Amino acid sequence: MASLLGSEPLTTTMPTSFSTSTTDGPISSLRVLYPFMVFFSVLSSSHASGRCFNTEKGLSIEGGDYRRLRSIDHRGCAVECRDDPSCLAYEWMESAELCYLKSRSLSGDLIKKKDTLIGFCLDEEDELRDRFRDHAVTGPELASLAGLDGDQCKAACFTIPEAAIYSWTPDDDEDDDATIGLWTALFRVSAGRTCKCMGALRSIKLVFNAFSGFLGPRKRRLRQVKQFNIHSRY
Image (cartoon, rainbow, N blue to C red; front, side, top):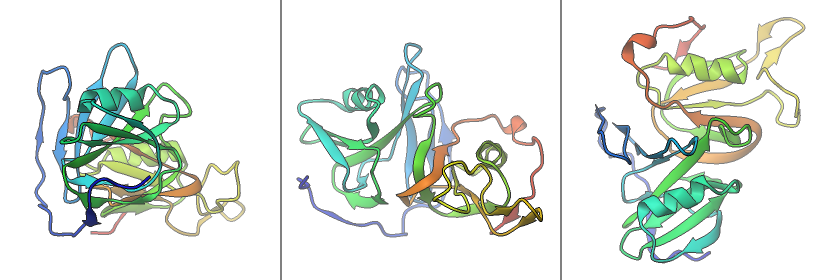
């Protein structure tokens, strides 16, 4: 679908400071500034287990549009995506009050796009939408780990205070039954790095049998849990 607004590649000159804040309002529950995008939990209702996260205004990912909604506010756009099993993300244009729902085949880089933001919706109680299935996320890596299954990957990244996203990739993307990535079971030798913990999102790419997800808020005192063999990049 043709874009109504111009866009340009995202540069790496955005602020690198970190901060957090919470509110008691009905919409926002978490706001974290990262070098490449702002995650802002915009929708978390007791009537639905889904939660949506969006960037600050001025960012989006091209492609994957399958539905357009007119004369709709940001919250309404997020609700439409949250309640649609086919929706992985949404794009909302403030000045035009336009909402585009993006399919689960979305694959692209975060770019600058005037007066626009993109949001992602997950549902932890839905086995098909509890993570970004068949998608790998790239971004500034805080740690890379080998020989972990998917649940261990999420738990390991959860212990890193600055981590906002985890991404797990199997050794063979053709193996639909893979549970351990880049791991030689016969010799119990790690063959590479499969679990990546990142502080922000630069792109989300379609990679079969991989999966990624947001880590969400957690209390500082709970970060020190079961130890993993983490090889930090920094």
